[in-house]
Image (cartoon, rainbow, N blue to C red; front, side, top):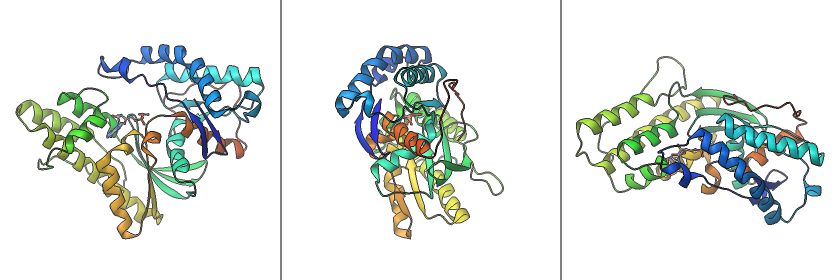
Length: 313
Ligand code: KG4
């Protein structure tokens, strides 16, 4: 839960992480996630108001995310927000979770304004998006199979690093050399789509066939190869659209190697933006920022709003 002023100023941003709860299962267990949301939501809301030093009278709009995501967890937030909006008579606007990840950049870069391109990289999504204005988006390319975060998590699990895998692969890769050749998937024609299932399977097979393989080298090679794939498609998107500004978004945008490589694009005159590390992974401030821009554009949701697990941009 977060309180954000004018879409850009974070007054509070409370994160109640469930990572320690899910760690022992090697990934998020949806039913456990929603139960823990129920347990946390009132407490976290109270804390967000206190830390921001505001009361309900100060709140202009309540803007929960309603998708994409795990339906049980989304329903907890949507139902709670609906009840609050109804009881407190406050306008209510549902927010697309991916719009939220993009908006994390508005908080970190106070002067950033659309249009720009965004490479959205999370546990459930990998997309190149043309952000035309605050509420209009065009998806230029997307993954045809696994999301990049899923591939990071799978690689981590296979080499025995545990959950959540991305940060652990990032850390171990720093001790290795990217000296193992791994496959990249290219599609025919003029597409900006991705595929990460091939490289994921290649890492699994290599690890099974060569149990004494240097794990740090494997992580470094995986990270380098997927980063090259991301950058090749982003460069194509820049050429295709003529938009010379790229923002990173989603949990995987906290990867230190990906951040470093994308900053290299600045040498060719491209503006590169990335959220502060704490705003890359899921948080409510980014949802409130996107909610603000939807609110000032006049968008409103009714109390019939439902969670939409596969909501598109
Ligand atoms: O955006 P996010 O917090 O949640 C959603 O999927 O909506 O992204 C989580 C994903 C996980 O797959 C996690 O392993 C990955 O982001 N991640 C990373 C890093 N930190 C988080 N992947 C690579 N390097 C990191 N440093």
